Image (cartoon, rainbow, N blue to C red):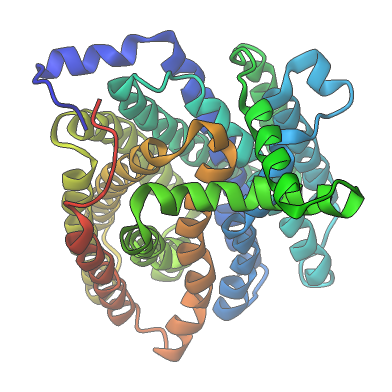
Length: 457
């Protein structure tokens, strides 16, 4: 949030900063893996004849995003041989994870889902772990592009990160869906396997782009963490391998958590964590099953690509930038209330589509409305937790907050397919339920709205 008044033009000019382009690319690198383990994997399993429940439960691999904060301190400290020296600490970790994802795609290109489902899901889990690990570094590098006293730039950076994420996810989805449909029409039996090879080329191109993202000069973060270790060792009364290990674990994992609760107070901190956990559950339930719903109602891969991915990307980009300006002018709290209300209303459009049957016009309206809502919600959410982090624990504390948000979306939303099956395929009722899921988070936010300690520069 900002204190001084400024025009919309002045707010828009913040996006001209070259750092915003770098943040855009980082966002795309972060969003692209979701094309692989969300859209592509779900549709691949659907077209292989697997059940909705199986597709939904396969989404449990996203659960690793909910726990990546556990190894965030390791990412902060361990250097990758050769890569760290050549590319820098942050970029070295990103490139390593990109290599893991690339090799996983090569394995996927040889798998038959019906014969090797366990192997396919295992490789998907490896992709999810690599992606979640990569996100730790991407988020830290993104936040460190902006100085602590640049509140407006942080809000703009959050918007660009969201635009980048959706660019990687939406345009990556367009490439994946059109490529798969093209190979299918050519008569290639294993068209999804061939598609993953094409997506591997996209990963290589992203790594080339990463070389243009400058890594900030090393801060005193590691020195401060070592100081914390020494203080803990002193309290333990001795210095040996065991006490050093205890000090390391306590200082790097416990330190960020203690810092968060100390800053906000126990009650407000719990309220913040509750809101973060609940905010996007309804959206996640809808998102997890959306592509299955589109397919069942009769839309082709090409139509899904145009409306849900291509058109959705344009909408997301425009309204994320507007959402960033709104967050700068009205504040993140108000923006989240606004977005939460829209989330509840737009989910009802999908219920109407389910009840009325296939309609390209209604499909386009529902997708556009959903993307507008997601844009506002996500940029406010990212700006919110970015402003909450302590720079001494940038990677770990942001990963902790983001992981809690992801936990609600992934663990609970994995039952989305089972819920549709339990409703006997009643998609309309399913979407109504996703609408109701938004309400608890807004109630939680209402009670803590005036007590949150968040930067307003």
